[in-house]
Length: 117
Length: 110
Image (cartoon, rainbow over all chains, first blue to last red; front, top):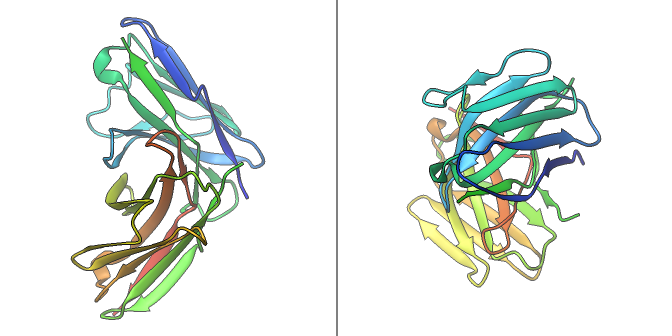
């Protein structure tokens, strides 16, 4: 099946630093990638949708200057949390839709747990 | 690697019961989840079950877990058109890394 990886799986950083999270589709081309944020045992909140080669579409309430998304190729999207603060600590999950297939089918990465000290 | 699988489509008539199935491979899973995604929205957590339980009921939703077979199901009683959505099964070990299925699109016909 389609595999999506995320790197790193866990990251701890100091307040004020920036953290980059990578999302890769390993065996398929992803036209669209989604970034979600989850708080413990709660729903996944959609942060933004990115299409290869174009600017990401952010959901209401998500600061685009704080959460920078780049989808430079059909297999890679990155989320950069800029000037991270403790309230940014969360579990970030990406998913990808396969090019040429039903775009409703999303393949999820394993998630990245960010802890900001 | 560990895997979570579910069928991609399910179609039922309004008023019938829907059963969405999921299988997983990680025997150390401790939490199993069902999420609902409506068009253009995030994933809404419907319910979750601890791996030491075999059933959980919440109003119209019934979750059954067969840990031996690593099989999870979500039953929706008296399915309504508003239940049409994509349903994702997910599992995690001690609420760390989560693994999701690809989602089952439920279509409810009047």
